[in-house]
Length: 241
Image (cartoon, rainbow, N blue to C red; front, side):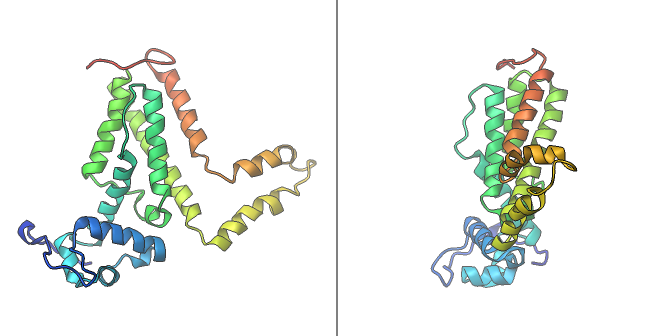
């Protein structure tokens, strides 16, 4: 898409597409996510979207200025999905854990698209709600503002970094994924204790653990570290502001 701005009054397409649907931001986002998951990043073009939607490609400019505008909408969609149905318990550790796992799961569910957008900052409705929510968990949990901001930064970066890494692994073609998994058996399994005593001693555990994501444990490590930084020691409940 090339940059183009359409006035708000002209944004809605009233006539149905060839498939009988009326264009909307929701329909375009869902279709874009489906195309990227099926065909990779190259599928995200105005021409392919127009074909998939059964609409003139130019009609997409009524909803998105350009491809980057659509990418930001996709990024915000992932964040919005992580917030769906979430309710605070009032316990900062429980709530922060739940939020981290939700973010990771949201991106991991559609790895091809996640690779395109996990690093983006949208400034849109879902992202701003997520920032507000996480900061609220920390501030209501008793962390002072300077520390709450630093924790938010590290927490968000950790969740998104693992989401991107795990999405990249999930997006590998099956043959490549199997080859990567086989490396642990072929390259690490035969290493002798004489030269690699620690690998040899832990190999069964190592091979089993490396088959999954390291994020849940990394998240627990962060939460445990945060308890030591809390002004009240290893806890602190909800505070009144």
